[in-house]
Length: 420
Image (tube, rainbow, N blue to C red):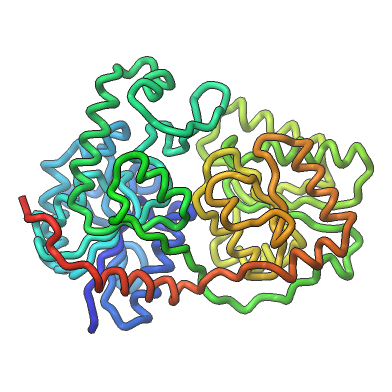
């Protein structure tokens, strides 16, 4: 049975190629390939697009099946639209015009936490599914669950702990924030987490256990070169892929590389990604480290989504040194799909995807020496590399992931909650 599916994300991969936007857009195309009518709605703001008077919507893409919601007035604390008078009527009109059977939400940023409630009120029988990609509803610190001082991992949020991170925000506002978000999320029929770790975090926060399923993310099937495992190269090549920011562990990686260079290890590190919206102190720090490690470490800059498979195929091992609770990094899946071992931090969803000594190596986050030791093992132990490559865990393709979502959707008996 063909369905009309609205996929909603907090941006569009053509404007901001983050993992959530990329996965949401890949799934949108997979729904279409499965024979369903799908519309992609990406929210954006003045960073990427200027407002157009008279409408909240802007077109993107040539086919007419992708729309941008301009969201320049957004309260990041309550994750809410400020200009409800301007936005809500346009969203309601879009919903009534497209009349989706399913709304699949991938984030609340820019869209607004009110979005699922607006869907439920406008289309009472519509199934609403939300994929949880990070911890934004739980944590005001950009959804990281990392303390604002000392970069300590946060194991559980509470009003007291959140106030300790943001002393200028009264404690009672954190209590209001939690109640506000939980009330609006109560209109969602089912939640999906790509990792067991993230699912457990949201259960501990208060979402009902029986409403959160685990469906791993999938990636598109691509034709790319076969793995070489370093054969035919003068040096073993490591690769990093993603934005350059403190939480991705970039300074840790560069410091580990600096230590290995001082020991005379022969290798190359290609760092792919830009550093948008980062502080001057951070960009100065990594600029210094890049300077101290050149030419062994190569700063390759931003890359296109379409190029990622070829770039990953051109390295022998991918490194994911994040120091926050990553959920399900797409770059790990890309590397494993190509037979590449991965060195990753042993926390969050990364620890579910990479088993130490089986399909990669895991290290304590934030420790350059531990990361450097793992990198050295990969370079100096060819038998280990062959073992790790032979045991890679191929991710699901995106069409398989879409089928799993559709099976979950079919099992929903709407409406779970009566329209307001």
